[in-house]
Length: 464
Ligand code: ARG
Image 1: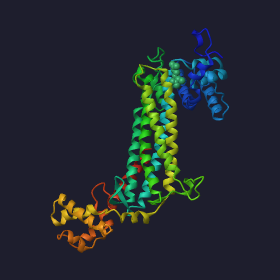
Image 2: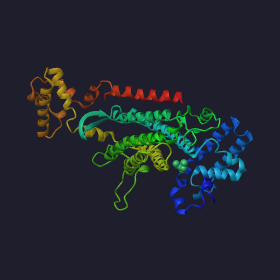
Image 3: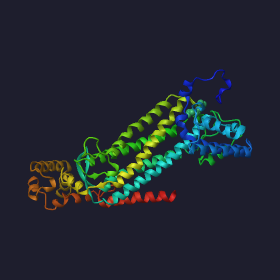
Image 4: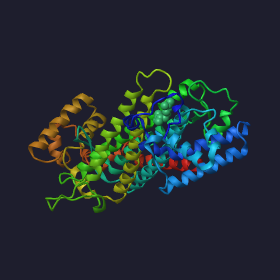
């Protein structure tokens, strides 16, 4: 079959070229966006008197039939069609005859692919945003149950200060809120329509780009056609947003893996989301968080790939840009399934609060409290208080006990300004609640944070 663009060629193309050049095997993912874009474009052409309304309606009906054929697996994808745009246009002409050949008036594949891909990215942006809100909701609900559950707060993966588990979970809610906002910002920034830019310079046809933009729910048409047909920032943004979110998920995954180990046992991942070993019958493996951590590699790769493809391309469209899609499809698929399964893992895991609290009894978590006590109650400079507390830690270590288990006499032997009220200060729960500064871990502050996230979610629901 001869190519749509074969007018200037004398010989037919090699099949190797077809194989190398074609994008149909993956850009068929854009069929829905291509059809929606073409319907909007042809209706605009009719409104402007460039097509008759009957022609535009025939085109629409033909395109809807094609949508149905794809949806029900009856559409024949042929490598000789090169890409989804030509495959659909060819089929349209088969269905409705010569009118199909008018669809491409006042556009080029350059603005068409920019439109289709942007519609796809915008659609996926919204789907991902919804998944993120569900995940944040899960974190808020779980944190409500754990505003008094003690867990060792760590730095350098070493026991540092007692915090509550709810507070720890809300750290992730904070990260995911930023992720949500990043996807939303990108959506807004890129919500402009490329169609009608044609090859690179606009078109001599008297089109109305604003009308097409409106039909496709964009804010407005893009301002400069030369930039538009060569811009893939919207794709890079979704890749970056996915990578950043995957990095957050990977940090959480790492904690879930540690927490479900025998050494921690802070959580038990439900059987529904655990796997066994083919050789060791006793094993229950955290494959889901491990895969979540592992997926960071491929989504980061996709981001770097596209940054590299775009680097150094002269204006405007270059065929290099056909390499923009597979990575985006892959990253989008990866983040969507990751968000869904992570949500389920968190919802169904059990939290072993006794193990968390047991872990707080080791590591001298309230050492900082002793130093602060010496500053506040004994008029000792912090640097000196830090040193004295170090001596108390050494004493506790020599006795193989925690600093909170030293007797009043033992503490007094280190510094005689210490009084009986120190014992309250060294208590783990009191220590957690003492950190009552804004954004801190006290139960009161944690409850305020829960309120904050709840209100934020509720406001979003009202707007949407
Ligand atoms: N399949 C192409 C792509 O994905 C569509 C645009 C082709 N445009 C062109 N001038 N060859 O980039």
